[in-house]
Every structure is written in C-alpha cells, then in structure tokens.
Length: 131
Image (cartoon, rainbow, N blue to C red; front, side):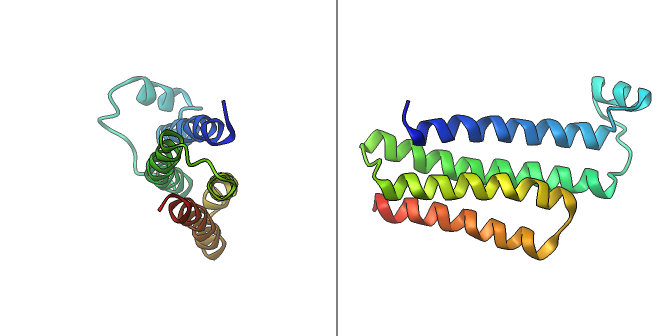
C-alpha cells in the first residue's frame, strides 16, 4: 500500500477516534450515570460541557474534512496521479489534522483556525496536482 492510501486508513482511524471521544465526553461515560446514558438511546443527554461541545465540534469537523481528503486521495489513486505534490499535500493535511484535534480540545481559538488553514492548503496542493 502506498503513502496516500496509508494516510487514508490512518485518517479513517483518527476520525473514528474523534467520534468515540465526542461520544465519551458528551455522555460523560466515565461516570456510572454517564455509562447508562452511553449504553442507552441518549434521549436525555445533559447539556454539553465546554469540553464536550468542543469534542462534538472536533468530531464533526474531522468527519467533514476526512470526506474531502478521502475523495481527493482516492481519485489520485484511481487516476494514477500519485505524484510527490499529491503525497506532500496529503501529508500536510494529515499532520495538520493531527495537530488540530488537541488544539481544538484545549480551546485555543486562533491557533486552531491557523492549523485548519494549513490542512486546507494540503488539500489545495492535492487539487492542484490532480487538475
């Protein structure tokens, strides 16, 4: 498996972990009552804590960006356009997303946005190489 496909797999795992983290923080699963909520239908979730809200937003943003990344990466693979520019864009995207998650969890607003922009630059490099 090449670098691009490996990054798609890793990004899928990271996306899944952010979704699990959001569910954990949202339901407060580390408590007895939170575990009951997490194992139930989650009909009566308590209001999100600030960290729970950030975890939800991190998961949503990660999912949204993963869809774009996966589409570009899989098109590059299918078209046989796995140039160094596509790989570099994929790597920039991946490492920016790795940085983004803890920064968003920590609630660091301007740095979070800057790191998000870096990940978008990675996607833009991929698009430029594909067109």
